[in-house]
Length: 301
Image (cartoon, rainbow, N blue to C red; front, side, top):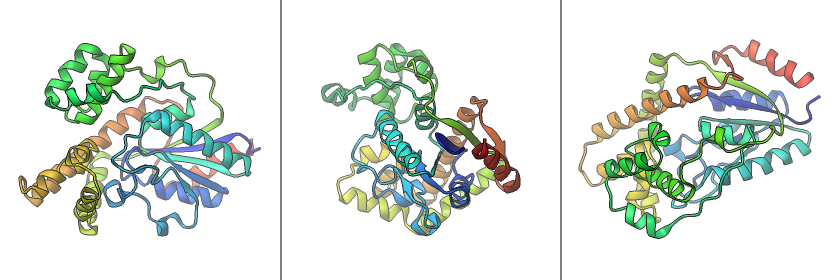
């Protein structure tokens, strides 16, 4: 019985999630929902490592290129769209394959979390935009010490949004405290095991390819189309350093080195997040035999 079942594939950046998702979708009549907080942005293709049409192998993908990068896209918006897509895929007798590395997005969907709608506060944002990340962090720490423990202290966009939510709600709610109801679907979660040294090497190699493919030109184009340097910095990872590179404040080699380190630190945070979910079944990427056996058994029950 395949009704009301979804497959979830998780793992850190550069672990091979997308290739595995496409392979499983082809074999088991599936369609893919991307759960990536950067790949929702139009035009951020090279910069976010977005899967190409060629790599999709004809498999339908959803929640890529949803909004312009100038727009803030929340986890609440993602959940609403993902729920709708999953319902439609199931209705057509296909298998939804939710794949990505943004743990917050995935948790919101698979655990059917009720997320608070907190609208932007323009006046507060204007005030906070004048402050350094260190000042923003101290303010968040006063408002919500728990959220301050696991936020990117150098990302002003995330700090400002956290302060905005905490100011309105009293604190930034965690998924566990939101009162989520019973999950809507039967889940099979597959995680890709990664060796840190090998993954760090893959991240470095992949980033050099992104530079060669034109990540800097892509960012310059987006800037000309209205993406501010401040917003670019808020997108995080390599985009934190592109404005400094363009303004010649850092060298190209420094840009590459800093960006690789950011990606590697991000992968570490992803591994930490997913390790907390004991429902995930972990496999080496090349262990296709056992992965397929698990998926087949899940879909047949």
